[in-house]
Image (tube, rainbow, N blue to C red):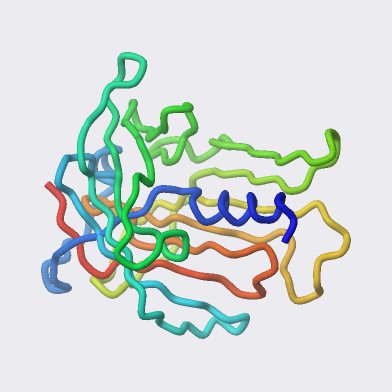
Length: 226
């Protein structure tokens, strides 16, 4: 497999960000209201989230996989004078069973969540601008793929194993492969999304491999936030 495609798989799988895990029962769910960035991305040491993994075919049929991912906030560190939170855990298929590693280092600034490079991973108040734009260039001048992220609001409640959530905000990515030889079953461009619920954090995200006709998806199974 060309190295550029391998890099693409890693970028798509790890974008994001950023994913989480936890412990509450369905009946404890409270309909949230749109509030501060902290509500949608709770950053406290000890917070954790657990996700189930699914494969979604081209007809939208979901098949649950046996692998789950557990993600937690392990500590705070200082980078360039700012305090960041370290997210550690597993991320199928990029970590083996039982393996954990640092997945993201992030901080809150105003209504945004950013990483150490300044990339905006979430905003609770900017629904007009492109928050992150990425191009991968190969052969010095050719654009291999491009990605554009912006915030949108979910138009309906989002249901995951832990419960149903309202007023969900979506970090929405549009991915375009600048190739003329893609198989006809591969959509181009295609969407991938990270769904955040107030008071909880990331409740669902979908992603894909470069030649995957459908999608892969993570859905929140349980969580604990302070």
